[in-house]
Amino acid sequence: MFGPEWPRLSPFKKLLLRANVLVEESPHDSKAQLRALELYRQALELQDSRLVWRNIGRLHFARKEWENAEQAFLQSHDHFWLGLLYEWTSRFEEGWEHIRKASPSADQARVMARIARQTGRYDEGIAALRPWNDVDSLFELIHLYDKKGEDAKAWETSLKANAAKGLRDPDPFQPVEMTIPNEGTPGAPVFIVGMPRSGTTLLERMLAQHPVMESRGESLFFDFIAGQLSGGQNLMRIGEAYLMGYTRRTVDKYPLNFRYLDLIRGVFPDARIIDMRRSRDDTLLSCWFRNFRGQMRWAYHWDDLETAYDRYLETMEGRTDVMKVRYEQLVLNPEAVLRKVLDHCGLPWDKRCLNHNADPAFHEYSYQEVRQPIFRDHIGRADRYRGFFPQERGLEALA
Image 1 (spheres, rainbow, N blue to C red):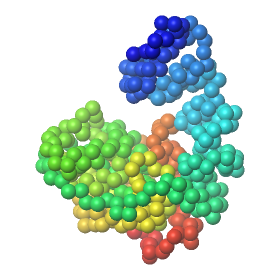
Image 2 (cartoon, helix red, strand yellow):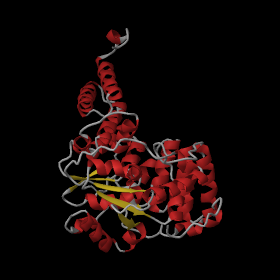
Image 3 (cartoon, rainbow, N blue to C red):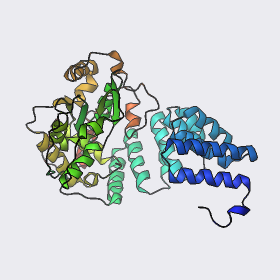
Image 4 (cartoon, one colour):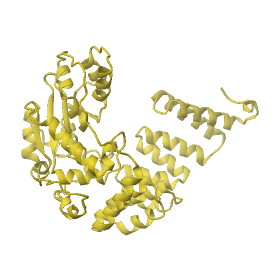
């Protein structure tokens, strides 16, 4: 397993190497993580090392053991990881003090920029990003210009960022041909669908605060199942597999599940499906400014993006088995809309659902927005940018 130099290594280096191999080979395995932590601790008994402390901190960070991670990073004097940790846990002022002391890099600049967005230090965030021209830094720069109100610079940067992605999908959301199972699995999981950047995370965070609900985040389960079925696989007990490991009723906010609603209905006839709908122009703009993870190739060319939105509307047209919720109404009158949503889901009213940002360490892709109190700033934001849009196609204010 180890090279011929192994016998000549010191006991400290052997422990360090064994721990590193565990982390590299099984980065998400909890038992491997705990064993690696044990080995790192043994190494520290032989030699105090900032590197080992940093590795311990990174493992605790991956496990969301924030206090242990913080103590380890303090021992390692690692300003970058302390800045990132404090950003993730909404301790922005502490994060700022550390991240600006970290060695300059594109990663350091992006963390600095994200904290700058939260604390109003827009000029300092922009200055940190300017030396870096990578795609991720360009997308961060868009948001700082947008926050500062420099719309022309935000749009110019968005053109560079999306072009740098170099991705296209002119024909997105093609129908998926598959045999729809008729399982009738008991249970009524909740599915929030729609276009990305339409408010699905906000609504999911609200429902996840209900004591009987449990979040699945953005599960790609049915995306995978649809691929298997369209490839001719004969799958059984799909519903049981979906519910495995969950003890409470689940809410799934993967927006593109709108492509698989017939499949979901075949598996869960009693599922509650919510179509989150936002102003078309605001949705397009928010997607255009977003550096998506995953295979959203249609998001980086304006024509493809418009086509994707049209296909989404076509797919949802005429469906009577979903509840349509307007993002704007949810933001402007959250309690009234949320009461209707809970009633649709067969859930009693619970005021805790209004505390969508109850978990300050929530960290998925839209975490920066949903950690904050509900804000109205992005309603109608496209009005500032419509003059920059590459073409006008008679976009309605509310599709």
